[in-house]
Length: 223
Image 1 (tube, helix red, strand yellow):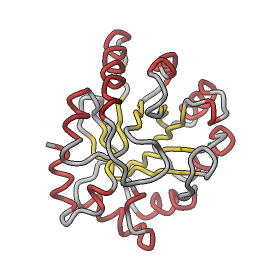
Image 2 (image 1 turned 120 degrees about the vertical axis):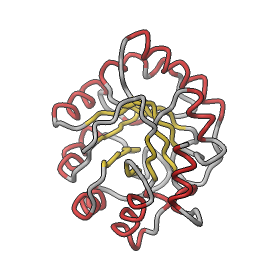
Image 3 (image 1 turned 180 degrees about the vertical axis):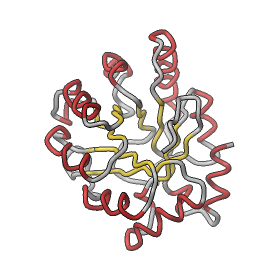
């Protein structure tokens, strides 16, 4: 599997926007359309006000498709559930920094990386960059939410861009190489705004899976 760097433009369609009755086929369609990663949003009804899916879906995708699985845990106590998501075949697991996630962030990130999985840290639009800054040396990816997490189809929040710029600056100053990912309202118009700020991983749900031509939509995002 390719070893991506933070200088690569990575397109990660979000399964949340796919046809849940055809998960494996939808993943194949995304790969054939040019997707680099599959973004899998796990929601527990506690940390966010929605429930999506768990390790079984991730395992099903892992067993039916050869693609990098980017798993975003929008859940309480991710440390408790971590072994299940590792066993399911996750390639990267992102957890949240907010106190509501109820875990020792450093310890969870360490456990992810010790399992041979890439570690990501996410923060919500209302959470300041200072909340994630202490952990930058412990991560492979920083996810800046560009909508309030929980539901697909929301509008992009441009006010998050200064936090992405701050992350780029901190990465350079510390000599680090983590990816910067954006998730929420990403499409042909908003993708360039996010990449101009410094994001290199674009999570796109509705704008890819619901596009008339998924391959054209992904190509447009990449360019």
